[in-house]
Length: 584
Image (cartoon, rainbow, N blue to C red):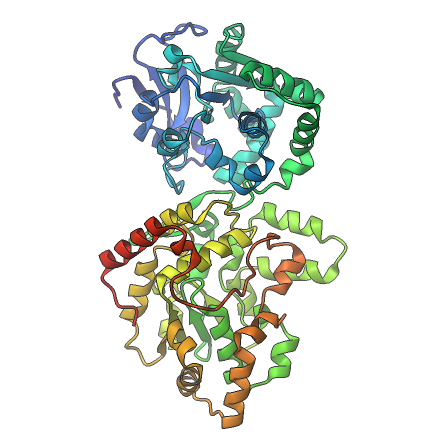
């Protein structure tokens, strides 16, 4: 496939089939001699990249460089993230608070990531272009594929080398976690040495920069040196970047960059979804990559005719309605409701999709001395299609899901299960969902609301796009086993909603029972109720400290996130007008 600056030759499938790459890969060659000397004959030099990269290849080549840029260039798994965090702090006057608040991928974009992972929620090339100077940009590209202006404008470049044996092992684990590689370590190592893994071959990549190490705009160092004497490397990089550092700042930075601190820093450790995302069906519903492997099991789950399902888009009053449903259907047994967690009484069907094995391992390690917490971790990480199938016949099942109707098991509609669907003003949903994404370690979002809105609007967060979800529910609202509720109506007249729901569930309520249920569901009481307020999630460490709680204000209307950002409010209103849909 020809390009103006490069051309590509497909790698034979039999050479890379063990890598489980979905798009195939190619050898990428430069179509003209690079403007700087490189190792070997430039005509035969290549870099192996997924075919998906070819869509952005020319954009990378023509990327506009600024002389004040700083670039972190490495082969893969050579201490790149470590060096990025160090360099960003040096460039930004050791602003540790800001570094903790804003994800490193936003502060220092991975330029070509949109090519390697096309479904990344934002355009990384555009993000890098819009950064304020001095920009810190990451790349794994070899010399001949970097933006052409790098060699004329000569920004600062920091190159980090690592022992390839260690880099290869680390890349093997990365490939297992991020790409889904299931082959042997031996096969992967051979593929790595043969140059078939993204950004390889390794040695030409390193040697090009090694021979440029004396250039005034190039700083060449190694991962091993950073491990051995980090403070010395920091001082050298400060000198290279013409930045000062005090002894106090040096001590703080060394501590901040320690392995334990980096491992626990959500702004650096990519602690949310670790295996990428998939978009499912014609509407492109957004899910963790794990869904791809388990979709069949979720779809083929066998519903029972007496099941009760609550199916909502997230943050639409789901928890509130769950508690309401369970109590109405269980004769207002408040004692049982308080003594047993809602997550046990009313399981979340697909939540295990978000419990990545690495997250689970970390939670188990953190809770090693608490048997109850370990039991709960196992409970929330077991797929609903397994745990719910084990409930004995005759015991009514209450099931929560955020799946849209098109992804529900067909047996749910075939068996005419009771389905309650709740809608809410999408502007309020977006604010609440933003806070939930910041709260849950399984989500791991650390950006601001402005950036989050751009993801929400474009359908790039789990269970989105929003209006597709709603439209599917409305298309089924005529069915006698489907009840549509509106969150705002629940706030306005909870008594009427409870009465409607009781009728739908074929349950009778006394006046006293109705009053007791209204009191139980009062937002102040609800927030204090440890059986429903996410206390168990906090106990095992799945919730981030310092964020809004699982049960927030329970309100509606214009919220602070919009009043503080009039442009976002304008975008939200325009987005709603384009959808042209009535929620009920």
